[in-house]
Length: 197
Image 1: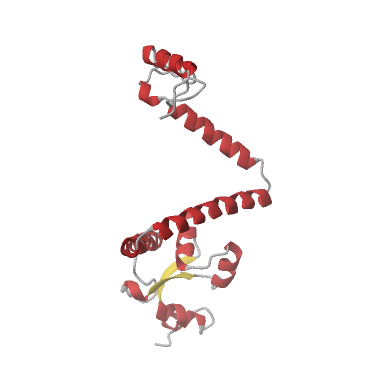
Image 2: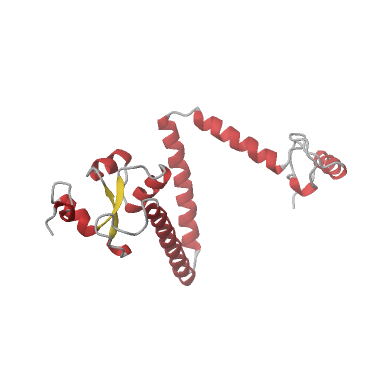
């Protein structure tokens, strides 16, 4: 247990008598302040200040510096994750992996559901097919490869997230794989619409 210095004891005594934040001026409880500090700011004001300082620092960084910062954060997170997994017994590790896989699956399904809902739900815009496993998001203008390259979208989940983030822009529709591939091999027009079936 660390010793409380006299200045910290005086600070605590002052906060106990009058727990008012010197930053926002609001009366709080003693528990709303860090136990050791050199000021009388509450946790909430400290968090706001730290967040503003962080964004100010990030705004001043170049794209290269920002990428370096992201890489460093990712490296630290990866090292912590590797150390955590290495310390787990085999049984616990297997259970942990099952839990993570289940959470990832649920997250992907939720994102997919939101993306499809933005374009009318799980129903082919051409033939009306409603089996979810047969459906996909189609680029109306047949520019899917170009769109994915432009935004560096490598997976279906990334495409769904892009659509959600950009508030479901026009130029996309729900098609079944038959209609989607039919368009691909019929100069951008589904054979249903070309009258060939």
